Amino acid sequence: MSTIEDCHFSKLQFVWVKTKKEKHSMKHILIYLFKERTQHNQSVPLQQGFTLIELLVAMIVATLVITPLLTFMINILDTDRREQAKTSSEQEVQGALDYIAQDMEQAIYIYDADGIYGKTDPTDSTKNITGIINQLPNPTDTTKVPVLVFWKRYFLDNNQNVTVNNQQQRVGCLVKLSGNICNNQDYMLYSLVAYYLVKDNNPTWNSTTARIERWEIRDGIRDEGGSITRTETINGTTKSVKYLLPPSPGFMPFNLSLEGDLKKKLGTWTKHSESYNLTINKQIPLIDFIDQTTTVQGAPPPACNPDEQQIPRYSGTNSAPTALQTGSFYVCVNSSKYVAQVFIRGNAKARFVSGAEYQSNQSEYFPTASIQIKARGFLGVN
Image (cartoon, rainbow, N blue to C red; front, side, top):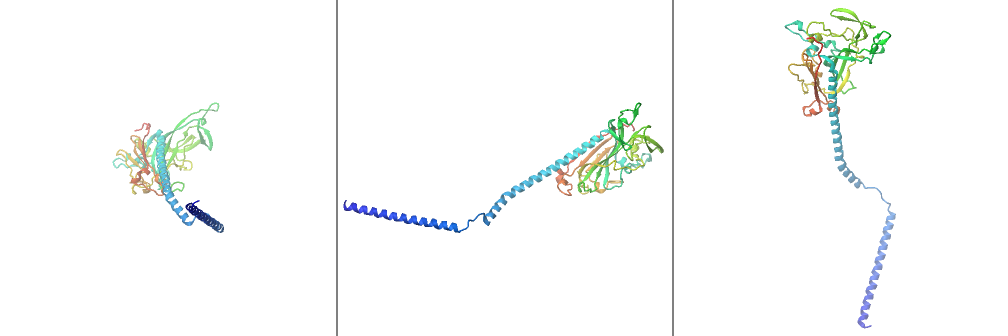
């Protein structure tokens, strides 16, 4: 080998030895660091969970995300509740009107304001009308006022059970034929019906709204063979009348033999001398959540045509108490045409806001409906 070749070989051998030593040193360093780290990890307890800063950050992020969603859900639920309240009120108001219309299918006479409150004719006293307001239950009660009052026919099917002398009997067996056979007769009788606007703060009902109640008394079945006797005064003459089925306590049939037209004849009707039994003939609630806002507080006032009379009356003698001058339940009556226009206004807002009153800019929460009803008027008296 030449001198030059020996020189190159020696250089290569030096580089290799140097590189090997460096690698050996690096290896020892890595091993040392690894041991130190392992010993440190073993000497320090293992930490679990989140730091306070991490928790705060998580809470802030959660708040930013959940709050809008929660607000959105609350708005949806509140809107849904309001819509349900509106729908319920609208359906109930319409249902009440439909019930009244069905109830009046057999009406024969509807009282106007003159017939209820009375009328004085300054030119002809024979045309004076007494009015029946004092013949109705509790005429001085300031928590309720009669609105719609009418006479109607009602049908007793021969298979219907009635109470006679505290016993249940079938209508068709009130009269027996020879051989103790039931005559199976049906009956068509008369009754007096009154619908009231009521506001008495009964805790059973909503304290911020009024309601509508129905009251009815019925005639009985007169028959000489009846076992029930009642004393009645007709045209100043008192006599005993026998009944197969007794009338409602306080009921007295109208007297068409009186002088005057039908309006005067029925406008001077008087009850029987016995007291009404409101336990038997109850005032039954028809609909609640009727708006209690008065016209003085901004509720829409009643509006009747010139040829109609408004009931209840808001001024004059025997007018409705101020708290019941709401325009939320009233009728416009033309007695000569036997026609009544019935108006009802509900208060849906009171279902979710205590003490809610009528506001024109929120009229959608005060559903209003009306219906026109015509009585049969077949009595044949002018």
